Image (cartoon, rainbow, N blue to C red):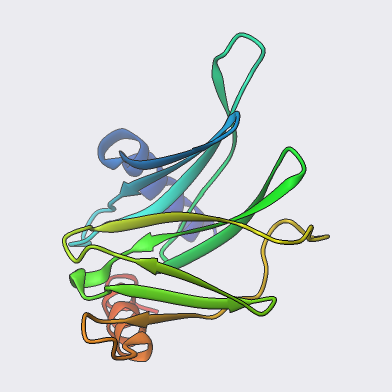
Length: 168
């Protein structure tokens, strides 16, 4: 277990020192949701992470929270003032994703993605207040330019690629 922790620490140090690139940012009132990408040794592609920054009393932003991982698609809910916002972000793996659709509370959430974009970031104002503002259970469907459902294909290819480097 200690060996795994050391590898994780080494990878985290590598990420911080060598490979973080700030990507897109959404600003909602006094909050910024910033998407960043990072890479790790021995992996040919990038992963996505986020930082939530809040404007303080001197108009300076401070980091409220951040996260990163190897998931292809990610979503989270952030509460800003008295509203909840669903944030969708992730990787346009191999540039094949043209549209993403999710459904929650009888409402469709759709994002069109430019095929040349390596990452995507979109926010949606939710109609209701949610007790647990960490996340909601939403399945996202991925489509190509011809509106073919490519969710399983992309997830399988991506997971195989990631697992090839991590040996799990």
